[in-house]
Length: 273
Image (tube, rainbow, N blue to C red; front, top):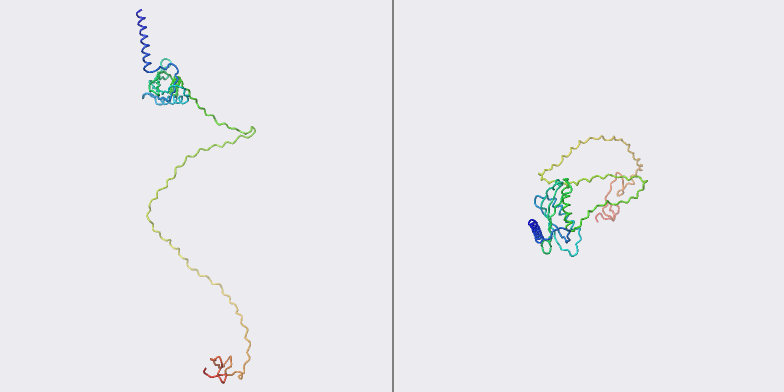
């Protein structure tokens, strides 16, 4: 009887301790909560890989951006602290395991309004995908706890092509594309090196060739035409030749100095004017 009463008192004490922790640190996250989550911060010590922290932060931030703001909900920010990274137990001893704590803090008052501790396991032990799968498990647990939407994965659709080629047409000719040549580096202009002045000498004049004697063309003697003989003049008589008359041969003439008269011909013309 005494032992039963002792166990009952111990249970009551444990409940009181849990209630005091809840009052001090906010509500425990035992069901999905509805808050207007504005931002998230992921932190851990140096033993936690950096890529795991980045992947959790990226996934939770995408979920916050994809969630529609609930009407009248309290605005909070999330603080995710990764406490331990190790391996599971029993059948999960080869799978990675993470223990983390999530605290929701009110934006208006700065007081924590909800807090919870979680443990998740990686669904695969493949070294290439274990970190990515573990980050997705942590983000999925946070999305469920705070009623966040799962972001949609955008699928890139191939462009639709419309072909008007008939079945009877020959197949199109496909020209292989040549890879683009890498851009050439711009040619650097060489620096001008100062040169010593060079005295320019005029080019030597070519020697003049010796003059060559040219043979004169043969001179052909041409017969000069002889002028026809002048007709013989009839001899003049001596009586016809007188003083003061123009004669041709063997006559003595005088020079006429006065234009008005000739003293040799005219008797009344004075010798001196």
